[in-house]
Length: 289
Image 1 (spheres, helix red, strand yellow):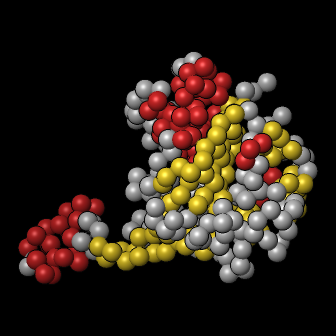
Image 2 (tube, rainbow, N blue to C red; image 1 turned 90 degrees about the vertical axis):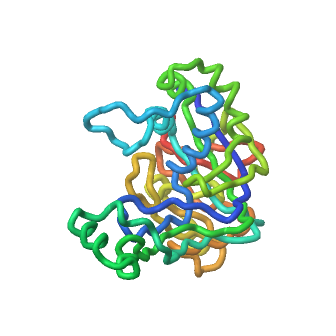
Image 3 (cartoon, rainbow, N blue to C red; image 1 turned 45 degrees about the vertical axis):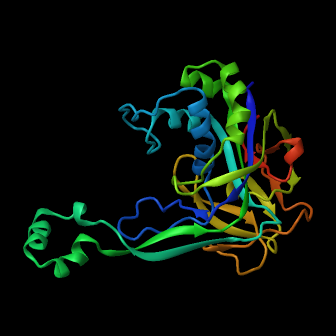
């Protein structure tokens, strides 16, 4: 039997966060919600520091499934069974993904011919090449309140990290309180509430304010749920459902969901919705027996 534990934090965004679309080059759109990989990263960063783990580049492995930047984070993703995030119903702001034009340092990415040409031109003519104007995406929500949760097999995690299971368990609740950012390092957050423990599980009808994989639920209340596309734990783009307010909600704008309004989804056979008793408003759907 896996030793499943639920990592939970309720955070306040300082301004928002940035999770950019994979594969984008100059133009860099952003996702409106932190995907599962970002949620796992939010917990992994403080937990790895508490365990004294070094962030080293990933070892060379042919056929690696995920484009991770460290072996430590690969361990976290391998041990994670599911993750989710969602706006608090009482959040003072929603989430708005916006592309803002700004100048970036693009000179270092230019080819030799372009570089030589720019060096010969007067500076006022070279500026568009040295520092081109590009649209950069970010998700804005000043003061927004977001719930995040991850379902992790701590035995698998400890084995991969080569630490004791007890060491992980001792540090886990501190890590949940120690979440400091979502997405890039500028996405600073403050933890309002945090918890860690063995989860409860429910099959069939359930409510959650977090997103759920569309492939894992058989029905939903369409009037209260919108569809978004996020990266799953393997960095593949997948469809998710999430509770939202006004019907203007879309891939770029999400409003806070209504409060507890009954059952929004029903799990497909073989899947369960996991949660902590004291924070049952956020559930993580996963295919774990």
